[in-house]
Length: 340
Image (cartoon, rainbow, N blue to C red; front, top):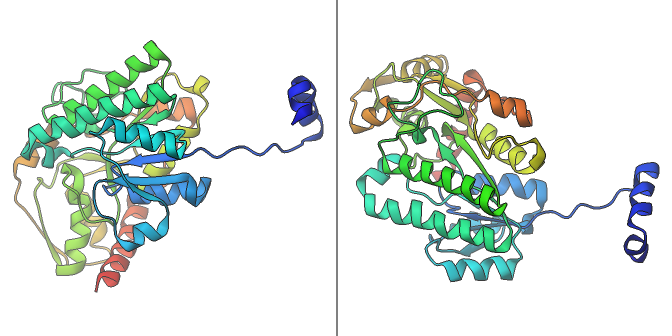
């Protein structure tokens, strides 16, 4: 350590010449809204990379024993700024992953609460990140686009006029994060995810039919879809979503031309997904009864253009629709068996 302080250039040259390994400190990561759609799986994924105790899951919900046993879990209310400050200081947090949000269909049922959680909560965490010089990741969504946006494909930069409070709040988050990056140098990073599909029960998103169909078909043999059979939407398996998040967080700042990127894996319709599932479950029955979520889906991208993410930080999906269906049937069967 004394030599490193005295002759830093000599030490760097020695490392280059003799290949001496200098341990890299793992970041301390706080995940807000951790018991939502992505939080628990994200914590498992990042704990595998950075160590169990370096990833802190948080929410305002009482966790299950499995969540508590898997790693650190704390209470965190994103509307309580002083409480968040205390967590960051006491746990020496380096990175903040902000998942707390009300999703599209749920947000439309309680707009005032969605404004508080999605917009006021965002104000708190971004100011927190600025104050403590944190790297902050905030997910965005296909819902950040609207009926005036090109839908097939939807490029990274285009008109955004969403018609849900969820989408409005995500556009607000994107612009606020970019402003804090340019104004204060905040290391803000954001990915616009398509529908993310995992074995967890659906959480109130418009794309969640692609999760619900597996649960209902495997439990009851039939599913009633709330979207029309030809409604095309971009999707990805949670495995690809978490890998994209992790690779993006680790990407050097100098590689990032933007602070907000589209990412995706595939696009399909309920009819196409049903056709793939029927290869495993030929007797499945599906009916269609579109509801208010159809209007939301009709305003969203059909195909996402993520060429900029592929170019700038070498994003590349691994799970296609065939892999997705086989994975989901296996994972949902295991989840159903475990719940009995």
